[in-house]
Image 1 (tube, helix red, strand yellow):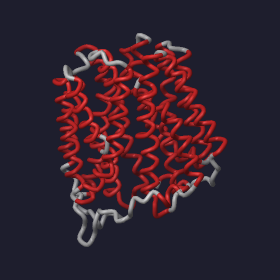
Image 2 (image 1 turned 180 degrees about the vertical axis):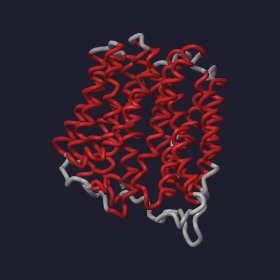
Image 3 (image 1 turned 90 degrees about the vertical axis):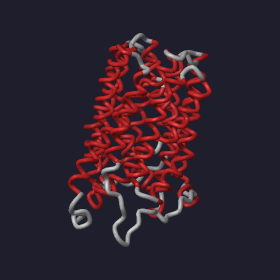
Length: 399
């Protein structure tokens, strides 16, 4: 059905979707797993300072995401995406040269957060526009992002161990430059008589009017406060137990497990319903943190890593579907924006501050143990207080 809209470029651009996802998440995999370890080991930052940086970056991402969205809607989306990628790469390249000055490094890192925080969501919009009526196959292209992340984490972890973690900034800059070039090859010019701009307002009142949604978001906030903090400080955890060399392998394992789970998630949710799957997936987050704290053995930690990949894939799909069922249809985009803000930005801010403080006062093992208990409390909260809904159809799941 989408062929008449883009008869000349559809096939080429669809092939580029997978490549762009791979490059975007490869850049993330080349830096994210190792960044806090670099701050701790190379710069000697305390956990509190690391947590404050992470929280500050999350605040700016939360505040600037709508601005990037409006800018994207007001012009060609691919040009705005290329601009964000270019800015992100340049700011990353400059960071190691400012490592001797806390103020300058901090400012550059926050600028990097502003430019990179909306890259993935902006390209999601481009991909969905190109796929048109065949959006149900979106997951087949998004999988390349998980594969790119896994490849980068696995490969560059060993490279950094040999040549230094400072190289992550240059690797990131190079990959994002390639992603920016690919972004410019997409044709996002609106067809005649059409407009990409979304006239739907971002009013929160109709979205937050449902008490069930507020309860759900409260449980997700508890769960993701612990989980995002655990991921952010995981490299420091591995360094503490003498397993720094496994950092890349650990994050790669998590990402690789996501690939088949994203493919299986629709059938699992169609079979059990999205609330049971959400409870199961969030329970895995808290359980993993507790087990990591109780058994800080490198080989056992690696065996537990698939829990993170299984949990993320099932959580992502079930949470999106559950929120979608709890908001008015005309406010679907607003509902997903609220979910992203609560589960990543607000939870990331809170988790970074709390974990950073716990790291300095009680140690990383206690931080993981406490975080695991908080995560399991969030799972229990969802199980007890979030009302169950009807199972989503397989068509709805894929949409």
